[in-house]
Length: 151
Image (tube, rainbow, N blue to C red; front, side, top):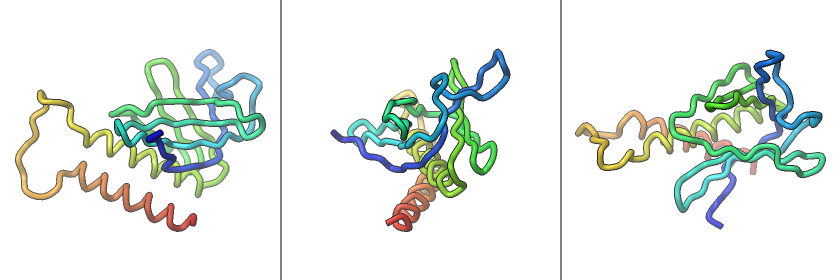
């Protein structure tokens, strides 16, 4: 398969419950840490967040990262994002793991935002890299540095 993990971290996967106005485990009654990976499908240049429960190896989240997703680092160890149906949260085991994950998420989003929107999208002609390309390069460098430090 042409999918590879670009990061791994431990976190509790949460969703926001509008009724109770509280964060709750994504799977009712299942608290505790999951192994969270961001996978990059190199064939079609897509990314997804996959969380597997450490305790019983159940998949608790399998979320496709889409262009334009708003990722919020609410605290150093709690990050969140939303789609039309739900607000997702990750409560990380440590600041370091949160940083590792957020760098990979920001890298994923920068790659997705740099992709062409098709022939209808016209680009301005300019010299040098675009701000998106610069940001994608920065995110790539940070990710590579983190991966080297972990080895």
